[in-house]
Length: 262
Image 1 (cartoon, rainbow, N blue to C red):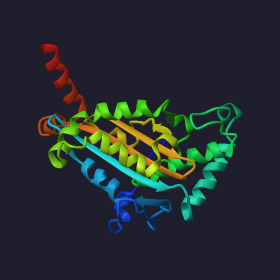
Image 2 (cartoon, rainbow, N blue to C red):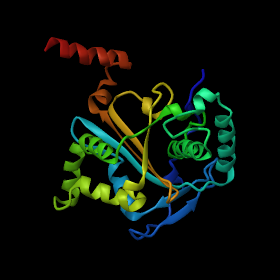
Image 3 (cartoon, rainbow, N blue to C red):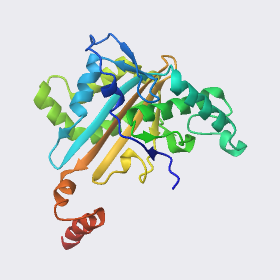
């Protein structure tokens, strides 16, 4: 079966594979990975790590928020460089109808192909148990504006802000601190923002029990840096149903059946 994101041997995430000592809030450390084909440079900053740690699992009542924040340098080397060349050749040789326009720009231009490759390599690093090398430009979309993205994130993470306030106090809001840190890392308003459109049968966004998710790539061409931000919400009711129901269909029938009775 052909899949754009093919499952492979489970390995730890990029940050976990290359954990370094904590850095001062504005001091960047660059780690070059030696695992598998991982040669993009992971950027570590104390302020970003705080949010990454907080968002790993946030209990908000009926569901749990699972998030990730990672930043990478777009300079590639080793096996990533080899994969980049291969992808560039494959995309450049696509039919002219597919090259004329795309969410990352005309694929006849090297810069547009390079953007696409950075998005693919980032996913490979974030989710090393999957292979995204078969993705193409149509698997991504370009966001229309920074404020629209911020509004969507703030809305979906509204319940998360309460947990943040309980841990950090109410003086500085979750959203204000989050976007300040992201701006420090990537210069938010100088970025092109992309979103991966999941193929639910074959990628990490296809697991059962999740009620919403988002993923954004903040790509700063001048800084040659990309920041990936994703969150998804897993319903606790789905986990609780596992002891009684064998599969998703039974769970869905139960949930919608209860709604019909109201």
